[in-house]
Image 1 (tube, rainbow, N blue to C red):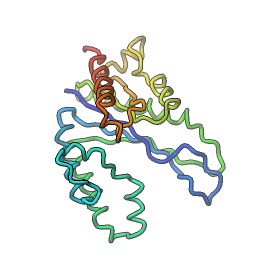
Image 2: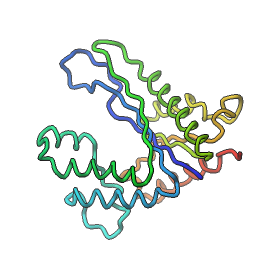
Image 3: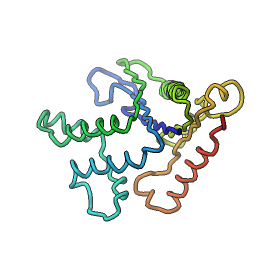
Image 4: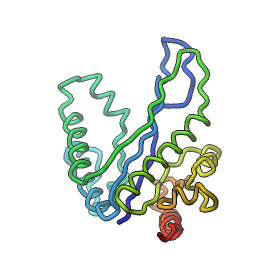
Length: 222
């Protein structure tokens, strides 16, 4: 059995200069684990959920997977809840529906939450890379428990920030003790693949497919 682990972040790495500021007070690194065999079904179900509660965001394209490009941003969901509270019916039902989908498809979530101190330094590189290391440990333990293999996909940030991730991961090399300890998983970083409008380009799609294929084929045999 093979599992996928997708890593993304919420918040920002900018230090908080004062108690009254628009800068987000936390940085959260979240990992989502899904059985690879259930990814297609989960994707289709999630697209149905988006169309049900946000129909105005879709242009009526006959190609269902074109709707992958329509993003429902967490910041927009939070804004609707702040503005309308319990009357934000579609938003609240969408969030509940998303959590129900994850339960139905036996997905798993874990996260590292960093709360910033006021007027305190915030070492974004150390914090992000240590969070990736924690994600690797957690995912590796999950794979051991299920006697499975898997690979991790970290969402792209910027080219400079992306280069910090593979080197921080104990799964980034198959040599030495770390390779043996994390031998069930492989880590890939989506480097500037622009998985929005640019993914309509055949060349971009080919790059994304090749990256994931390389990641799968580099997984060591047990």
